[in-house]
Length: 167
Image (cartoon, rainbow, N blue to C red; front, top):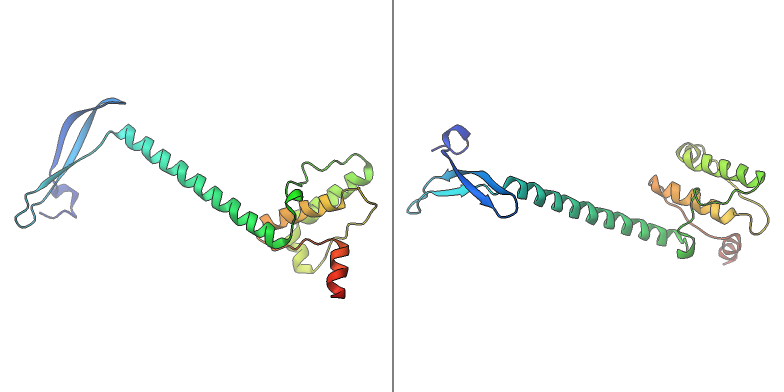
């Protein structure tokens, strides 16, 4: 018997009762005898249970992939030197409560969204202003967006950079 040809494999059908989903038609293929071993019937299981199991497996796989993605992002944030207390910073939660802050937000978001072009041209963004105006928040928002595009970033304050240069 040629099992590579589906038409050559005998099919069998029987009625089965799934405890969860009720009656269904189970189909079997008959495997040919091998040497002294007799042929064997392989019966299908409840199709609804099969779909549910496949859905659970797919959900578990998606959850595992999401956890791995989050771990990779956490590793990248650690390598970038972004402190944990700043990791929730985003454009969406930046408080743009003045015209100057709204302008800074639009500028920073535009730079982040067009980062690939800026990187090719070698252009940069400098955020300057008084203490407490949100420069760090916007810089971290840009950094996180740029990282989501697959680029590397490094976070340091101006003081830390000066200390590095002196060292």
